Image (cartoon, rainbow, N blue to C red; front, side, top):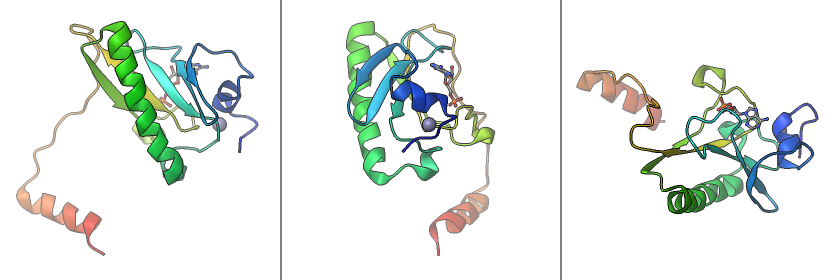
Length: 137
Ligand code: AMP
Ligand code: ZN
């Protein structure tokens, strides 16, 4: 399952060279070409899914297991002090390549990177309205 015009399909299939850290039948893990920190990598499924909204459960489960494996390996080998998993879905959320990928970002004390958001200050009633909207049928 692939999309002809998709660069990550070509990278995942090995048709475009990449700095590969790991590969199996379903996934390839590559170094990001514009890394936030040393070791910033991407988990790519070999099948094409636009993003999380299209990712089948069977692959979603494996992505998290693989993310954990890579995080442990990077902590051991790179001696990073922490780790961010980042996964963007659709343009408004920062997605620029429309083939599902999970960012693996090792963090180092003093690395100067900012991955975050500006916290809001909602009233309890507003939180309850949101809770009902999401959770109740
Ligand atoms: P996102 O903004 O979540 O869609 O992330 C896309 C990421 O892919 C960015 O961090 C880019 O630096 C990275 N990227 C784009 N093209 C390539 C490529 N050919 N090889 C490796 N990383 C890439
Ligand atoms: Zn693709």
